[in-house]
Image 1 (spheres, rainbow over the protein chains, first blue to last red):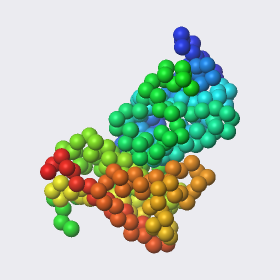
Image 2: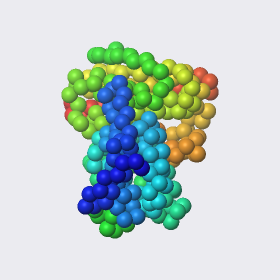
Image 3: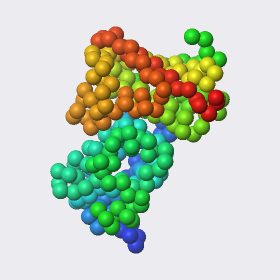
Image 4: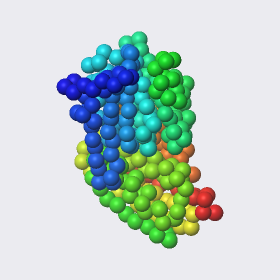
Length: 140
Length: 143
């Protein structure tokens, strides 16, 4: 929480330091940005979500959710270009986490190439999918 | 089976190699000029199989994973082989939402994803004998 940057929509949390940057031999990578708007922690992962990167993503989301005392979690998939079933497990885990505290986990920005795995998992039955972060913040 | 082209990759059972394996499979198959959806399906299936080998086969202990890719005409074959603990009940492992590690936030969808994204998935495994997953996908864009 050492670095905060305000803009008109909210506060970027740990903008410089929470950008966890993973790089592997195949050239894929992931970084994460967080933003708090109202009582929602908005998570912007960029890159590929698999078992390897989802472990980091889980830890970082839980840590930021606690430190910002957020009730709800919004995960935006707008910049995620690959996701396997580990990502589904990660979302279900965050759903349980917020549900236990009377909050919600929702997702936004699901592109066509991720839609197949979302549909297959049946995640849409328990988790709301909004087109944009703005829609999610307004309707959560 | 005689392939038009094939390759074998062996790597340590480290989670950072999941990305490496699926990118390598995709790079190998680029020659066939598959569609983005086809390559995305194959990458996802490879990711699931390699993750299973690392988490379930070796239970995060060190071991080697082998990926064998080959194609014959429009048929792509990918084998993911580990020498880990093996699967006791293959039918149960195939069930959607079944996970042997319920406390680890696993979705239990690994085999379901492989079966949905590929045309055929064969599992050869026995306790303490390791696991071999053979997946086939026909690239319909080439037909």
